[in-house]
Image (cartoon, helix red, strand yellow):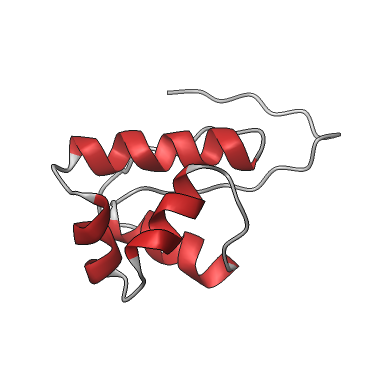
Amino acid sequence: MEHRVETPFFRAVDAKSFGASVRVARQEHGLTQSGLAELINASRHTIVRLEQGENVSLGTAFAAVRALERDIALIPRFSRLDLKR
């Protein structure tokens, strides 16, 4: 998928740190948990679970990423990755 503008990444190594990244991005956008839930057609409880690193559907997690204007790159643990900016 190609983007017209560069967007920030979520940097997370597990569900808990991913949830924390979602929370920070949501707050940066000035959204409440209810506001994000409404944007992605989910319940506030689902957003709470996502931000706490609990199980939510992959579709819900990706919808939150899109709504928060972030990108996500999945990298296997055994891979070597050099990020350059």
